[in-house]
Amino acid sequence: MIYSAKKIFVCGIHGVGKTSFIKNSDSLQAYTKYTCSELIKNYSGQEFKFKKIDNLSNNQDILLDAVNYYVNEEMVLLDGHVVLFNKEKKIEIIDISIFKCLSIEYIIFLQADPKIIFERLVKRDGGTWLTLDLIEEAQNIEREKVIEYSKSLKINCDIYTWDQLESVFNRKVFSFNL
Image (cartoon, rainbow, N blue to C red):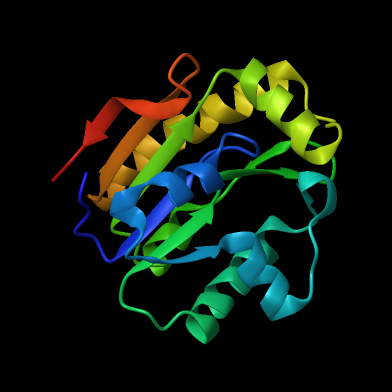
């Protein structure tokens, strides 16, 4: 697929495969890529250990400042999340206003079987505090919010599911195109 949007947001929960998807998608190679966590870290000096956030609202304000400070390119891809875990391991939802302020024009949401995500997290991070149930819950909430936000903001959205047999994200299960 060729994307005409200038600002694309690729999201999905930790371990779903966002980095691999972005790296292997020919149609995304023209975009300058940023991870939201790296932008926040570089701007504020914060590090995110164990995938838990202390103050979601503050972090999102920092993200907006970081994007204004660092991001000058015309075609930008942001790698991030719509839901995150707080330090109490509870799911928190990023407010729709953040996506509006970022001027996101296209959302790509990636999803996979929770067992696959769990295995990836264990392999990549050497373990995880996330349970299969929590992975599934977070992924379901993120998918619901992506659909809601794309409709509310009137922006295009695609949802891809990991195909374990093919080892690729190749099945679009939802598309909301204007």
